[in-house]
Amino acid sequence: MAETTKNQIDALKVTGPVTGPGADGYDEERTGFQLLDPHRPEVLVGATNVDDVRAAVEFAAARGSRVAVQATGHGQIRALDGGVLITTRRMSGVEVDPAARTAWVEAGATWHQVIEAAAPHGLAPLSGSFPGVGAVSYTLGGGIGLLARKYGFAADHVRRIDLVTADGRLREVTETSDPDLFWALRGGGGNFGVVTGMEIGLVPVSRIYGGGLFFDVGQVPEILAGWHRWAADLPEEMTAAVAMLPFPDLPMVPEPLRGKHIAQVQIAYTGSAEDGERLLGPVRALGPVVHDTVREVPFTESGAVFDEPDRPHAYRSANLLVRDLDAPDMLTALTKAAGPSAPVMCVVGLRRLGGALARAPRIPNAVGHRDAGYSLGVLSPVEPGQQEAVRALHRDLLEPWSGQAMGRSLNFTYDELGADEIAAAFAPADHRRLTEIRARHDPRAMFHVNHPILVPHK
Image 1 (tube, helix red, strand yellow):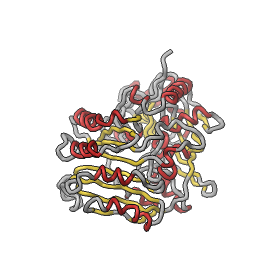
Image 2 (cartoon, rainbow, N blue to C red):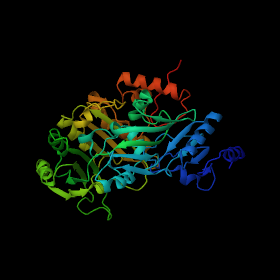
Image 3 (cartoon, rainbow, N blue to C red):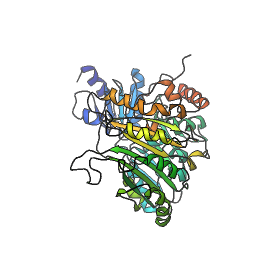
Image 4 (spheres, rainbow, N blue to C red):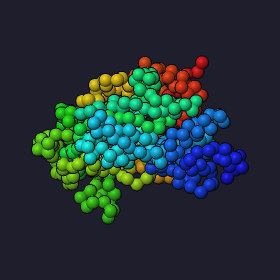
């Protein structure tokens, strides 16, 4: 370890571990679920409490260093080179108030931990498709989850946020204490400081009817168009998506999926199993179902709906929000272009939006493009040397839809974006307001984030 770094670390007094390049535990601490291009900080602070976070921010500010924050590292795409990385995985407490139907969630808690704490009270959070992601970072970006069409964005249900700003001050941010900052944090991401905890509303859900119906695209080549026709008129109680990917011909893959291009229709329904099965009738009629995991499950098993990989790996993704997908020929072309003949492996994901997502929350926030009807995303694992090939494929797959795009979901975009692309995730007036709020609270742009809201030059 360089002597200057050692001296800096010795000067930083926190209860959690502090390391630098070359030290024991440094590589393990800086690496999250996303393995492509991890952070390379000069100083790494494993925060255990709010005081550790404040000390790390004050330390960075005094030295003119940049600061990045990492909980689980699922969304990490823009590596910090030098500066201070604060990891919050040790701050994982969750406290549920069943009478108020709320939960206090610390910075490093995953949705799995929140789900488990809420379930004994017949309650659930507005968690996402994979319970292993960090609850706070997911919510700051908006949060489109399994119950989204019924209850809206996760950000709509935030009651309070504790935030350490660039001056090292801990602020309790609510709609009354700081309405501008409260508006910006809910949808504007981590641009405004380090969130150490948040209070969220819970919903009275203890079970869902959900899972996946798997189709062989070779047998049902028009599956995306069929899914779109079905999803267009669903009740708000059902959140629906479809993921399409080629499975390798390997022994660890279930035999019905092995070596096939598969479309997985994913549903989460808060109504009865009988009504859910009736609603699925038109989907089952699209063609032979080669694998079926749809069943009634407790919400603690909600991760089985999308059944996403739980092992860390390297990946990149791109996303567009569109008003509609009523273009059967384009959906068929997308199916073919992303299939087994594609230059790199690609997962295509469509999500039905609308319902409560389209309605303004009681307390306005910065979430953009609520009137989008669908999310269209592409995601690829990245092997060494493949990053540019992955980006090229993603551009080619999404370009035909660019004329219909309203913007993008930053939570579903795991790649670096230009300033104009980030701005397009918000209404123009909202983006201007976000830049002004960041200029007030982080004028030096000290906080290093995936999708930065740029501070305007004076």
